[in-house]
Image 1 (tube, one colour):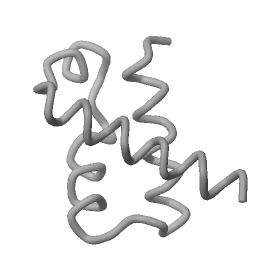
Image 2 (cartoon, rainbow, N blue to C red; image 1 turned 60 degrees about the vertical axis):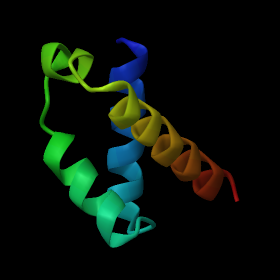
Image 3 (tube, rainbow, N blue to C red; image 1 turned 135 degrees about the vertical axis):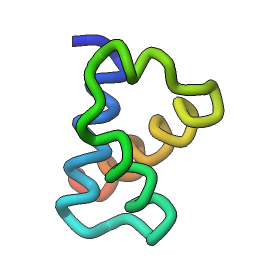
Image 4 (spheres, helix red, strand yellow; image 1 turned 90 degrees about the vertical axis):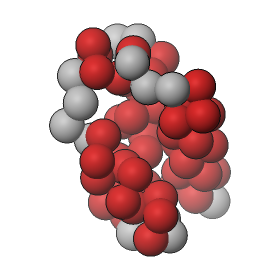
Length: 63
């Protein structure tokens, strides 16, 4: 699995846990079914946002 796929997984966990705001939910719902090729085509801003959301998810799970 690539880093972006792992980040996607973490973000989907956060989505399912209900810890995201509306904008984050909308973004993750739009990319949750992306395959590896589509994920690699994310813009740098989208990748950064995905990374930030995944970090929030891992923090909330650890707490």
